[in-house]
Length: 394
Image 1 (cartoon, rainbow, N blue to C red):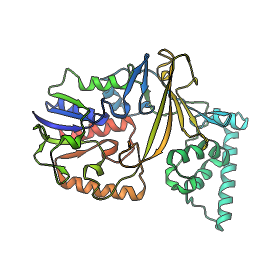
Image 2: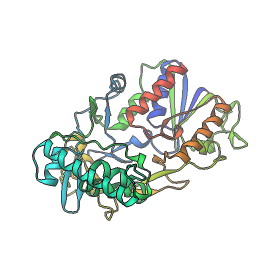
Image 3: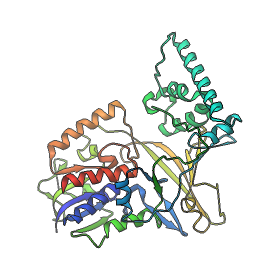
Image 4: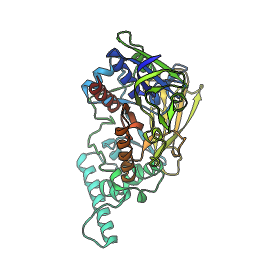
């Protein structure tokens, strides 16, 4: 078969690109190494509950163009993300708002909360400067940055342990730039996102992506093959795809969109980009109707090994029989593990820039998505980046 495009990876970026390519009367083949489409936003229906298999995904955006685009493929409910945090036997609302501060200090007004935060932050800055023997404060690590922004109480209870679990390192060993600011809201509002539009696709993300691929209005066509590993599929010469692009079975392709790891595409010839990974433990509780009363509960103590528990049915207001929960564990990453969060420090960003130069020299292969661009994307950013690529391409 002859295709205009081979799209490697059936995640959100690849599927948006494939849809727009087919809308431009192109013939597209998507290959996916997993046994399903949707990438990390894949949802699996169990007992009437749409389970977010790779962690919680809440769609949110202030980009009206992106919102109108994605609404062509699904209808969203009005879910508002309002997580809570558990520290020892204390429960706090997130993001940091007046409900958080009232519970923490027994106060009522924004003025009281601001006074406490500013006092504690000033004390921490003074202490750090004294220990260093300087009059000028400059945070040298994440702990100093966090304390200077939030003061001792908020940082110790709600930032420190969670961050150390997420990154696998002590806050004193993490760079300050990871926390450029902390979002304090001096109002009684638990809405985590400030974005104008948010919600969860009714019927799940998988159905949304299926609608994108199966759109009957497309002038071209999209074929999907799952359980296909790109490196077994494509004809290679010296570790990179041979030109003209062909599969080992004789399919041919005009161009390739690659949404996997860019360093893996080039055989790690310049070195290996680093990531943080995740591990999920999902438990079905058929005799429990409501496990924790909220979709997302964060556990901020370092001693609790998981960062959060997701109760999936609450994304759709209690729909489904029994309940299903997922504990999310951050994990060290090594090649072969599932990569989730790019480690965008100076060393890795420099290496990625070198791979980008290789990509520009190679030609007829586009790189996109979280792994291809070595960048953490929210879902709306993925869609915007894919649409930007298609506008240039078509």
